[in-house]
Amino acid sequence: MPIDKLISVEEYLATSYRPDCDYVDGRIEERNLGELDHSSLQTAVAAYFFSRRKQLNITVVVEQRVQVSPKRFRIPDVCVVLGKATEQIFRTAPFLCVEILSREDRMKRVRERIDDYLAMGVSYVWVLDPSGLRVYVATPAAGLHEFKGDTLRTENPVLELPLDEVFA
Image 1 (tube, one colour):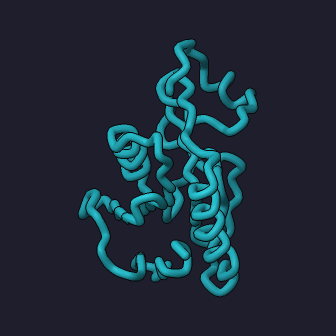
Image 2 (cartoon, rainbow, N blue to C red; image 1 turned 45 degrees about the vertical axis):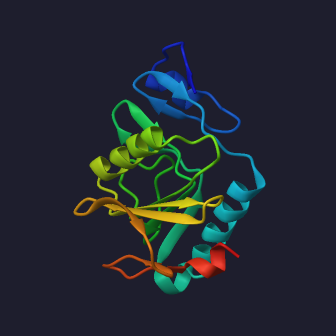
């Protein structure tokens, strides 16, 4: 839910929020999280990639500030960067952003987040719904669609996420 007071980018970056909040065109937007199914799935996805980070040559982080445009910052649940990440706040597009839905999430807000990531240059956005066990994939070429397979997969490079390992 947006907080009505407008603030500057500088004030947003100088303020700590618990949990961290998105910043959209001068407004703070709280993120829905904090429930067990959300946290467990976020941990499972991050742990899966983190344990393979050296062999895949990736950096995996959770709840990382990503500046998607001059006046917008998003906090994906999980980010995957090719190689070694060096930015304290990501201003270079991650390769993959993963969003875990909470019960209170509305598709309109989720689509805005996805559109921001894709516009920034993120190659893949995966949206996982722990309560409905549904998965969505978004790419610049194909847009957003529901995924019906067993293993999520990227190309160039290939990263795979077996859904039975994270939805267990």
